[in-house]
Each structure stands twice: as C-alpha cells, then as structure tokens.
Length: 321
Image (cartoon, rainbow, N blue to C red; front, side):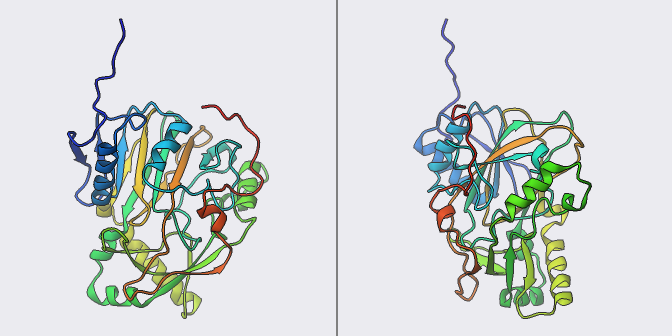
C-alpha cells in the first residue's frame, strides 16, 4: 500500500504558533521541500512578523534547501571568504570540528555592504545534549531604548569587519584546535570593512532596528574606549532575555530568520561532541539609516558573493545530497 503524505503543501490554512511576544514562531505540518507558492508567501508574511521561524521533521537535503531558499529571493554565495564544496556553492557548512562554532551575538555577514536579507539553516548532525541557538529581536531592542538613546543611536555609524570572527577565542588556544585555526585563517583571508548606520530601516516593513552585533568594531568619530562602552550598552539592550527566543534542535529541524531584524548566537556548551549545520542566505540590499544615508564599503568587494558565487578555493566534494 502506498502511503501518502497528508500534510498540506500550503501554509495558508495552518496556524503559526508564536514562541514569545516579540520573536519566534513554530510552523507545524509543512515540509519546505514540497510547498506551493501560497505557502511560500505565507512563510514570508510570518517571517516579517515573527523574525525567526522553526519547522520540525523536514525531509529536505542540501539541494532542496537551496531550492526553497531561492523561492524567497536571489541567493548569495555560501560565504564571502569561506569556501564551499563544489556543487554546493550556495551553502555554508558550519562544522564544530572545523572551527564552525558561531558562539557570539551577530547578524550574518554585516562586514559586507549588502548583508543577507534572509537565512535558512538546516540541522545536519547534532550533539546529544546542548547546541541550542538563540535569536534576539533588534527591532524590539530599538523600540525599548529610552528616547535619548534612540536619538543618539540614530545619529551614529559603526564600522563592521570580518577581523572579528567566530573563531577569535579559539585562536588563542593551544595548537590542538587546528580546525579552528584553519577556520580563522580562511575567514580572514580577504578583509572586509563596511560603515553601516547603527539604526537601519527595514526595507519591507519600514521598522527601525539596531544594526550591530559582533562584527561591529568601532563607532565612527568616537575614541575607542567610548566606542566600546556604547557598543556594549546597545548590545545589552539587544540581548535582554525578553528579546530572545531559544531553540532546542532536533534531527530534521530547519530555521528561517530575517537577518535584517535579528542577531543570533549558537550556544557552545557541547564540548567535543560533533555539531554540523548548513546555511543558505538570500541576497539583501544596502542598509539605510533613519536619515536616508546608505551603508558604504570601506574595504573589500562583495560583488561576487552577492551574485551567488562562493569564495575562492572551493574544495571538491560529493555533489549529491
């Protein structure tokens, strides 16, 4: 007897279950590998409202992941500096044994002048315990700033660079963690610096949010010590518990987030256990500040990445799922 998957292909008739008042929702009963156009439109609508969406029991592999992400917009390359396998040029693999532990608060690729708009993440291999990911709403953080700090933030620009990396902490450890050292070298093989407004206006919703995170290294025009204090203060608003949702991964999970309105942090609490996730990103536009000023590249050219090409030095690999 043939068993037919009874899950609806459209999300239009499904409920979206919020996980907190300000960020995060779980969508149940849908498989992104087999979803119709109405379902994709519903995903976009829910994403703009909830900032990050979670789905359990997904059946897709890397090719289906790419195909779904492409329905949300044009794709970037896997990463501006980290290579992707041949045949998987749109995919960034984060392997904990190779230094891929994104354990600092960040918005993806803000060192480029056009950071991704949307990220789609797929769990590949998970530790038995730990390895959760947290997301924070940068819109809620801005909304809840006191008015004097809102005015201050709206006047500021910050320089973002990839010199500040997921692997920065392990770079100071012993030579035993060679995978992390190699990750660090690849991550910084090309240097990017970009000046962004500290407050950006969302290109679809018009809502303002804080554009900061771990790649933001210097407030333009301020001494280093003052800059550090301001960055730390704004970061404190972003990462308040009431602005955060935490996801406990299971096999078959996927997450989709609005990179224009969130930061995230991969919790590094699983020791030597193996964790692998794969990410695909949808191309974004230059951020625009409250006064209409657009982000400006200082160093580095992200044209190739924005056009969907992977970083130089992509390694040969199995092109199958």
